[in-house]
Image (cartoon, one colour):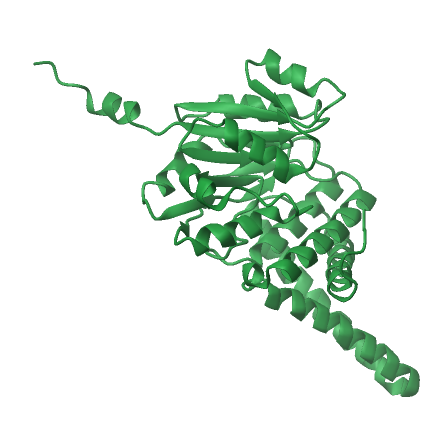
Amino acid sequence: MQQLDTKDHRKSIQPLVSIVVPTRNAASNIADCLASIQASSYHPFEIIVVDGLSCDGTAEIARDMGVRVIEGKAGGRASDCNLGIVEARGEIIVLTDDDCVVDEHWLERIVECFSDPRVGISGGPDLTYLPGTTNVGLAAGYIHYFYRSLASETGTDAVIGCNSAYRKKALAEVGGFDEGYPGAEDTSLHRRIMDMGYTMRPHRQAIVYHKRRADFRTLVKRYWTYGWHMGLAHRRNPRAFKERIKHIYALLGGLLALLLLVAASVIFPAVAWSFLGLAVIYLIFQGWLYRKIARETGFRSPFLLFLISSTVCMLFFGLAFTREQVLPGRKKR
């Protein structure tokens, strides 16, 4: 009797993976994203693009590339992801964003993690996409890498939305994304899945490359939005953010201490000399952080731009987070 080749048999029993890409007006990015997924070393998979009523030809580009496109509601990322999840046929559902380019081995490394039936969530890092990236984009990559590293390896915020994967059974059990969140909806989802007894297992080599914000104003505005989203999500579900919240409060505590020092220096001018010492300490810390991230990621940006961008972005992040705690429910978009 003819024996089935072991390698071919292993391929034949691989689970179907459904990749859901929510998008809106991404004509300049969607082709790169889809082409990188189609070049994946893993099979079988299907791609579902959920188009949030684009008016720039995004859906047509996706269809021309042979990808299934369904119409979204333009109601936000959470609602479009839920539409894709409902339509997905795979037992593993992977999400990425339209401005990402994925590694060739991305899917196979994610699937490895789901070989353990206890795993309900996986994913990996999102590094900066270097071709054509501006200096501001490179600085944004540094900031984002540090921002993400505040989450622990197993915390609910350790897997980011643009590189996240779920067991479909787990998604069905919790009812998918909560569509009441304007952002940080993935962290809330992770908490609910883990409360069902599933575990999270990120894979460091399951990499997507993200095209970063290209101008300083947009970058800072984005971190204000991040702060608002995090503040809103934390207020609704503090348990979901227990691993990262200590870092946010440390940032806010540092800002408060700085304000108190400024006030004290008005009354006691001699205290103003302490600013020089604080500035030196801060520069040393930022220099260490810059070198550390450069070693781990391999990308470079001018240090001065990184210093200014990271300081301003984290300041706005902290202020937006605090505002949501103190004045909840205010519109910030």
